[in-house]
Length: 103
Image 1 (tube, rainbow, N blue to C red):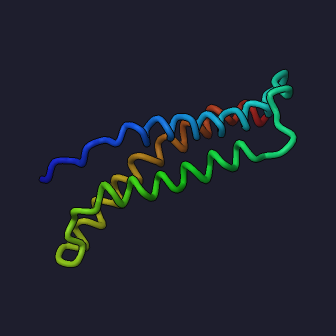
Image 2: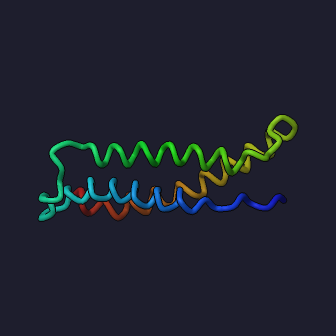
Image 3: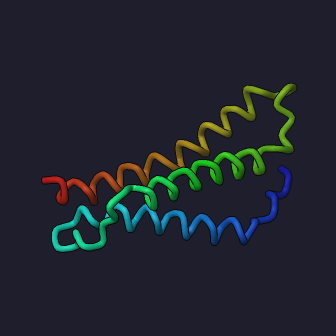
C-alpha cells in the first residue's frame, strides 16, 4: 500500500469557507433566522461550485498514482467503496436531522 498524499492545508481552509457559505444560505430556512438571508442566492451557489471543484481536484489528486490500466477492477472497487462509505452515512444522518425541520 502506498502512502497517502500529503494534505493540502490551504485547500482545507478554502473548503471550510465554502461550506460556511452554504450553511449561511440554508440557515435562513429556520424559523426566526430569516434575516440571515440574501436577496440573491449567490453566496450559496458560489460555495457549492467551489466545493464541487475542490472535490474533483482532491479525488484526482488522491488517486493519481494508481495504475488504472492494469488493475482497473481492484482500484475501481476500492474507489467506489470509499466514496460510498464516506458519503452514504453522512447523507442519512443529515436526512434524519433535517426531517423534523421539514415537518
